[in-house]
Image (cartoon, rainbow, N blue to C red; front, side, top):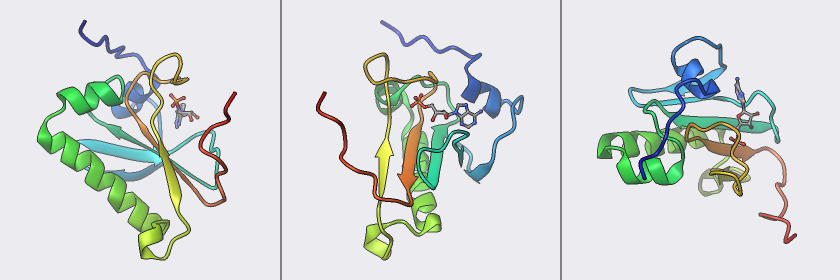
Amino acid sequence: MPYAYDPLNIFARILRGEIPNKTVLETAHTLAFHDIGPHAPVHVLVIPKGAYVNFDHFAGEASSEELVDFHRSCAQIIAQLGISPGQGGAGYRTISNAGEDGHQEVPHYHMHILAGRPLGLMLSKA
Ligand code: AMP
């Protein structure tokens, strides 16, 4: 079944410039901005500019150029923020929610980058 992308979702509107955002980084294929409701002192969202619904859609159908651009952008942001444990930072967590069980609110693929405090266990076991 083809992925159904909703062009009215809030990140599509941000990409069209209809809603403001606090940009962290922008490239030809990728935009990163601060989350409006941060769960940690650092909470950045990284999104591809293409119309992808979630991680498996992006990973399965994006071009090599888009895939590389997205991941290099994530690395650049992590370096910029000084949170890489490989470079003296205290660490971070990346999360990508998908669908109902994943509790995805915005149906445009995004990677959360969270840092700035101990982030606790990955998940509760409930
Ligand atoms: P998810 O539950 O993984 O879909 O996460 C969606 C995230 O988007 C949440 O953390 C929201 O706080 C964030 N969010 C929603 N609207 C905006 C917006 N206009 N600007 C920045 N972040 C937003």
